[in-house]
Length: 378
Image (cartoon, rainbow, N blue to C red):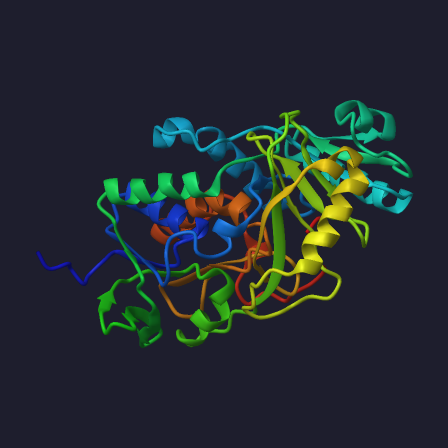
């Protein structure tokens, strides 16, 4: 049977944003086509370190993250499968008073939206994580409802849901053009010569957002940057939360339910572009940084390392909106937060793409906005 070429919505990208949006659109009864140029989870989603947090410094991001946590918590019932959700928490560490004050200011804002978050002194941080090196530590911002989940299982849940609701997924389908006519989106053309028509098209292309925008005739100010990660062998599980150290020689890592530690750090010298090769320098440096915070990790072996891309915007916040081309939407520039924001953004986008209204105010993520101050808890 020949596949139809006409759809209600076409999604370009098979990561968390594309699959979540496709799922919620399909649940609303739309005929959905999702096109992925490689394989599902080939991009940033499949290369993330699984963390999910709500501690941000802007209202839309905080609210979106809180809704995502609600959705993650309910995925076992939604998908009838375990996505390995764990409320293991996030602890942001402050080693000077300036950082502590910044965290406390953000905590006040986060609490306005009902988030259970508080500032711990150094002794309380040590009680929470007995193996933590608290030398020079002032305290930390602690949110116990932050957590982690398995991105591969989450994507399986969303893609199975798309198919079960009548949607179609095509992997290995490289989009080469998104065509419009009279200011309205019309079709999506692939490298194989297929042309699919839809009145709604969503660009959810991750690190390749800029290129996807160019083939559509819109400017998406997104730059990919390489970030590397590693995972250790498993040891006894102690529910060590995501530890985030913002010092220049800091990093962030968490213990998974398997007992393994997974983590990365933001390099001082960014590597822009699509190079996602991993390096020996990283594995040596990340191991040192992890052992500095938890010296007991010195004897734990590294299992493997890899790299992926953070799709960065100038202000550290996503671009989620309709473009100047009617019916052409974008959800790009997640700045390393796509997995944690993806479920809620997918839900919000499904409403916006069908009803024309947002569930929450989304001007912070507007397409064509004047980029301002950087997200403080990026």
